[in-house]
Length: 143
Image (cartoon, rainbow, N blue to C red; front, side, top):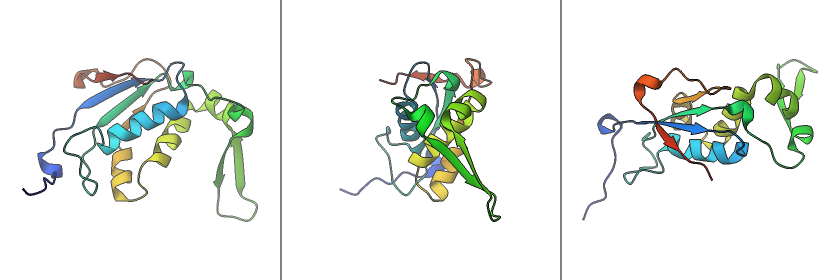
């Protein structure tokens, strides 16, 4: 019996929506990363991009457990001397909750071209409204 290898051209991609209201940021990010990668599919092939589309709504209502709001920081560097910028997650969740969710999901995807292409299929919204109603997304329950 030969091993089945999925092909990107033959895959039909579905749309899923995840509601992040009162859910831990990391658990929502894990669920989104698994769907983006395609690990929930029986025909999952590690070297093929067989993931699907994910919409995360209510990202501003996601919670961080413990003291992460005060102690966790998002760092970026301009490339110049002394160009390190640090933003606490308390400020990040108040101003750009979409960025916090995208960073969490990005860290859980492979750091290669498959992960880069998968991240383009992620749509994150701070509120409950999204623009993809025409795709008829399926709701995903996060424990």
